[in-house]
Image (tube, rainbow, N blue to C red; front, side, top):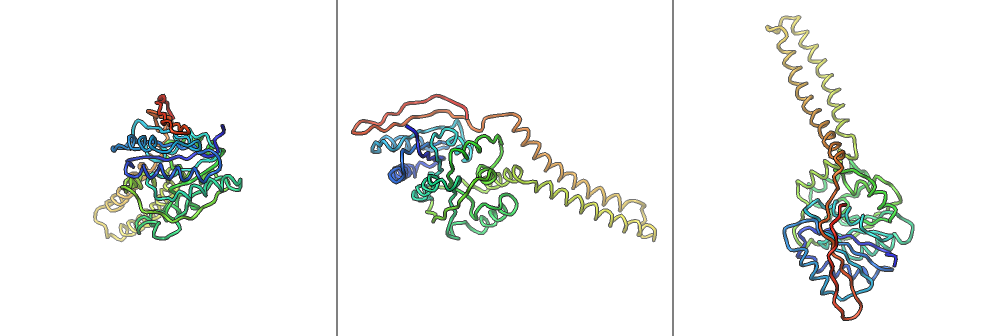
Length: 330
């Protein structure tokens, strides 16, 4: 039977909210047309998310409308890697991503699938409707910089959940960037896109969106999708040349007027200090590009799947069967 919709749920230290997440999946399945395939991707973590999730799935009422797979990474590779794993394994014509902390209402995912099924759009993304949902001052500044220098179309507050068609999935998964932003790729590939507003719910559990993770996300996005660092280096170089010419003229004038006792000292010191700093800045930026190119040349997989669990619902009072799968690389 052809799968109509695939739902991808990345899981990282979400043991406290997984029971509610499973109930939300059932809620979504009841309101969607056709069968719903749900792929939970366990992206490492230090809690008992796997046990809690499997217990919640086994205790749920079996349903023909929901086919569930639980995929486990060998370690933590990051949220984007988990989503990409789910996208590559999904078999539905339409795909959507939902976070396991239940900050997005299930109705939003239902709207995603409805809009994709209409054939009018290829990509849908959630846009936080309330200004309070877009974070504090530092978070808002972060996303303003992201919109200004990386992806101008991304909404304030970023994109936490999205949906796309099978065709868009194939294009995105064909991109072989190693250090990149999946959301930026969705905007970069184009297609017909629509933003759907929603009110964000309080988070259940602790956020993994740390300052370090934000900086890494921004750095990967900048180096993967814009030549901003190169343009900054070019501008600094031009400014440095201009300053050097002006300083040189001043030093030469002062030397001719006898104001400098040690010939050449001021000019040499100024030039050496400035261009040593400029050279260090340039090497740092160019080194970032070289390092990312090196990572891509190594051709390592974006994530390693350690285990796959098939969870099949059987109508009636029969138990849910849980069968281990095989290791694979994604």
